[in-house]
Image (cartoon, rainbow, N blue to C red; front, side, top):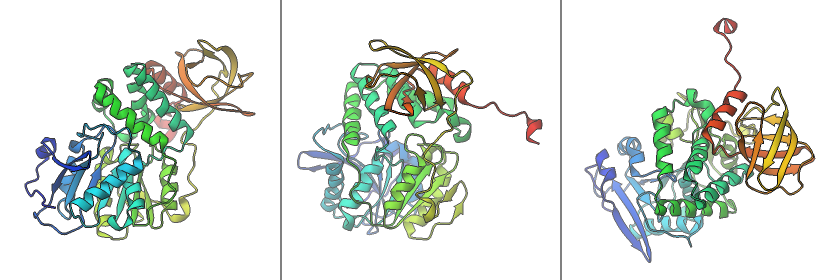
Length: 409
């Protein structure tokens, strides 16, 4: 590997190097302080809506101590090659083939969101090529609600309902109930929403293929054996903290750190808190129990985190109606209600259709929902949040009013 030594942030938007491995094209950029740097390189693998430009801050900080490689596999980032026949495992194998072709020493991948699954599988399937592993936004997609929402997003895109898709996806990535804590600006939210509303046909197909890979993934039969650091945004509803902790618990040598006041995009919302952990971990130094903006979980805590990510309580008026354009209408009682989901009780259909449901609560717009499971307790559901007005009304209903300042004294 010959590294570029002239790094500047503007280069991340420039043309990439291309490596052909059989019929597959891999796009990359590689930087270091010397062209023949023999040290273990950091490999950056981004999420579904990320490009090399997303890592401007990380590259500049990491280059002080490590070579840095940014890699786009087929259907990722700037790599427009479609690869419907490749699963997550085969893409992880392409990372190993990339390292072998360029004669790289063992890598230190940093995998974010979708990239976290690829990085983790690479570490499992090619342990000799992975020195250390850093993950954030674990996307194993074993949680039924997360899978249903991903499936609904694909169905909406197939129907051409890009506005509804974008609204639902945005609500998953950026927790609307915690915007004050995470500090996500309205400008950033609008920009991300516009990006998802304006996906080109090729970008829609790339998203579809990547989502189907996640849905088709059967889970980790093995977990990484190398030193591993898992970062979880404490308000991440898309990939929840307990899922990160459970993954870390299954690894041979892993730490899990909660990033305070962050959700799924913790690396960008709390860059300094995350960056302060990168360097000691990549150097092999012990992590502090507490550092600014984060808390490392003790090993004994990893399987003890609360799995209910929000409080769910019955509304003051529990009577509601569950409606479906074709299946009909049912009177229900709302036993539990939160922003992301709830539980309905009543004389409900034994096999409800998978899509097309709405919950009619007094004084609120109709709330689109997806049924999860019907049991003796009732019908568990998740809200798809494809209607911005309905989501805002629900958020106001379930968010407790702030206490007056005098009451807090």
